[in-house]
Length: 237
Ligand SMILES: C[S@@+](CC[C@H](N)C(=O)[O-])C[C@H]1O[C@@H](n2cnc3c(N)ncnc32)[C@H](O)[C@@H]1O
Image 1: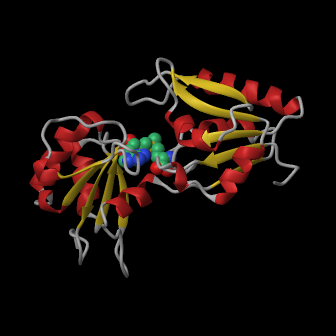
Image 2: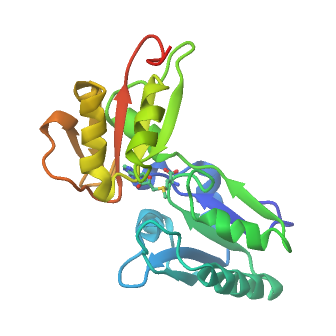
Image 3: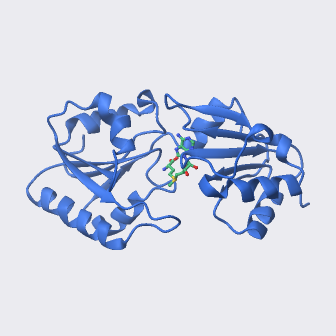
C-alpha cells in the first residue's frame, strides 16, 4: 500500500464477495477506517459485499444516504461525509471508501471524490462492474469486432431511449426500477423484445435471470439490468 495515499475509492465488485480484486482486498484489510454509503432506513449493500473480508475491528464511517427517487441525494450528505473523512485523515488515519461495482461507473463515490480530491490525494481502485457481471452471468458476450456498446439509463424519456437503442449493437439498460414498463414498450416498438435479457442482483445469492418476454409487471428491483444484443449493422445505418 502506498503510504502517501490516505484515501482510497475501492471498487468492491457487483455482489459476489469473491469478485473483489486482490488490490482492493489488500487495501480493505490494511486501512484504519472503512467508509460506505447506507440507506437511512436499512443496511449497506456494499458493506455486506465486503463483510466477509473485514476483521470487524476497523473504525467505520456510515454515509447515511436518503434514497431519493431519480435524484442524487442532497449534496450536504456528501459535504458532511467529506468533512468526517477529512478529519480522520488529519488524525493520521487511512480510509477506504467502499463502492459497489466500479467507483467511477455511475457510482455516487464521484461526488465524494470531487470534494476530497480538492485537498487530498485520492486513489481509485477499479472494480468489476455490474456490466461485466451481467454479461458473464447471462453468458452473453457484449461486443465483437466493430460493435458499439451503449450503457443506457432507464430513466431516459421514451424518445431518447428509442433513439439510443436504435444507434447501438448492444445496449445495457441500467436503473430499470420503475421504468420497466416504459422500457418494455420501447423494445416492443423496435422489435427487440426477443433479444432482450433481464437479470437482477447479478452474482448475488438471490440472482434471477428471465427473458424479457417472460417478465411480468412494470417495475423491477434497483439492482437489475436489461441487456439487448443485436448483432450486425447498427440499426439506424
Ligand atoms: C448507480 S449504478 C452503480 C453501478 C456500479 N458502480 C457498477 O460499477 O456496476 C446502479 C445500477 O447498476 C446496475 N447494477 C449494479 N449492480 C448490479 C447487479 N449486481 N446486478 C444487476 N444490475 C446491477 C443496476 O442497473 C443499478 O440500477
